[in-house]
Length: 574
Image (cartoon, rainbow, N blue to C red; front, side, top):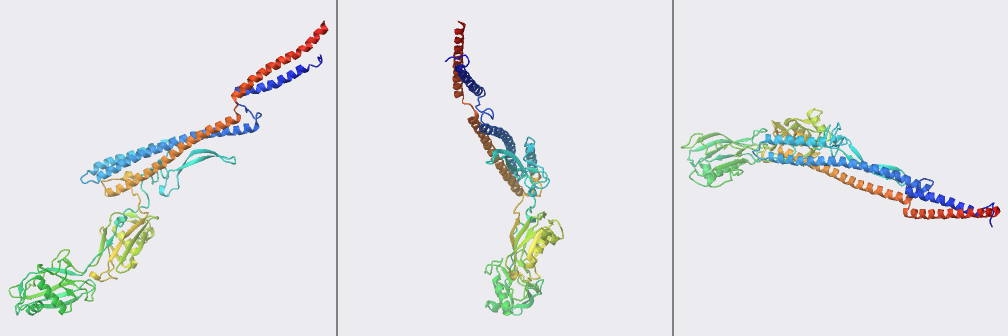
């Protein structure tokens, strides 16, 4: 029915318009903002999650920027290190050239000086954003300095418990530093080094000795008549610890004929004289032999030498042979004639009396035994077993009465070695730059074959080897180090530089991967946020068009609903 008091149709149409208006406003907001969750009222849960994620995206973006800065620092350090590697390679080539005979080392040194300056300049210029990973300012040597860490941001992390943090990648600048204020950079010397230990490092001393002997040149032939004779004294095994035993001997025709099995008294060759002397030695129980062959080649009919040696059976510690007090009465020869026995050959090999085994090394240069350094070596005297010995800072200072571990001369080194080996009877003496190892004769007085041999060797150290010069200290015109030692040291610098380059290259690769990962993560989070709060524009557009149509229809419905009362009023007006 139609009523002038209540218009149910209009009320219904108006209610529909209100609902459509609200929906239309929502759809228009989604269409204009692109968001279906623009504020907490739209969806508290989705708004909270998306807001947190947007914050993380900004943090990841900032970390990505920090990673790019870190990558630039790393690339700068790597590029400079690579250039220094090139300089060291050229430096090594120049050292090889300096080792060639006839090369003007002063000219090579000029080139080395320029290369060293170039390496230093490269290191100092490797700065990015005020940071230089190739130059450090630690006041102490890097070998005794705690790790010097440079940290770079590498990732933003949100843990499962909701906590957040920024991961850092650490670079230990002790591994990349080329030059440090207190020393220890790759281009600088290390501490605790012992060098060649004053010449002791490569010691392999083995002493030798043999029986006392001497060589004579036979000056015959000679004929002994019935009244001819040769008288002389022979002293066996006389030495610094004993006078030996002296025998008075005679050679006459009867001795010659008895020894040679002849009747004419003629001594024709050197081997005849050897036979005669051996007859005298055996007949008088003399510990000597004329058949020695150490350097003469031994008895031979064609040899004119007579080599006589001690058998070392006299009971005396010495090992020697000595003829003296010749008295000759041989027709046709002077009173001093003794068939060559009167004059022994004097040279380095023909006359060796009372040999005591010795071994020598040449002292090279001073060195210091630091608190962290130790020298180890083996030694043996006589038949005692090989024993191992250690020289450390305390041993040096105790032996020399010092406190700095400094060994400054051959005498110092001999004193130190003597002090640590006293128990085995090793004698260590120095004369000029030469150090001599021998058995202590107060303990081992025997000479010759019975003498105590000495062995000193197997020298090694802790540390095994150290770099003992800066690159800037290389000087092929001086005698501080050999060219070979310089080559070894520069090769060591080169290998350390290559290791440093490897470390920096690995970090650079990691940062590149981390930057890519951060970018991908940022994209993923942004996409995830969109899935939560972005409006579906196709759906929103279709919905907006539908709502606009529904609104138009609802407006028409309202208009129609309002016409009924108007028609009723017209009835009353009629």
